[in-house]
Length: 180
Image (cartoon, rainbow, N blue to C red):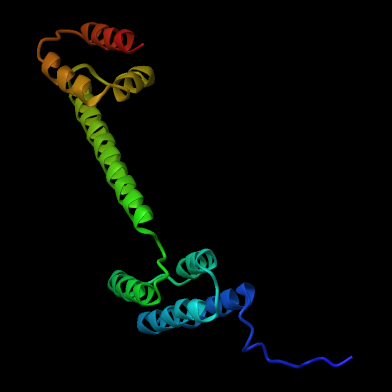
């Protein structure tokens, strides 16, 4: 039985390609430009290895995870990668996927912004209440944290009219009943 001896340089199997990428990531850890070049060669090599679109995506994701780039190099990489895809007419992300991602990002940003506004408003109102009547119980703080931004804005206006902490508690309880 005859075995062909090889040094593995021609091996384009996913485990070998990923091992090479990991070695390059370690070698270039302190040299951003060298890391960029190594990442570019590894990703471009996926196309040369004859993988289909799905295989390229999966391998690219792993290489991208292993070989982080700083912001300016990441932007340059993205531009050159898009040019490569266009030249090979093998898009990494379809236009539908890009649109869905953009819509998802916009929705996510809006949700995060709204949540941040609500949390910020609740923190300000809690400081006002604490200054006026002292620290609220954990249960009351939780009740306050669950108020919507509109309810918090209403509470800001109402705080001027409330004379006692019991009146505040009544207002909070009324909001909880309306919500429940």
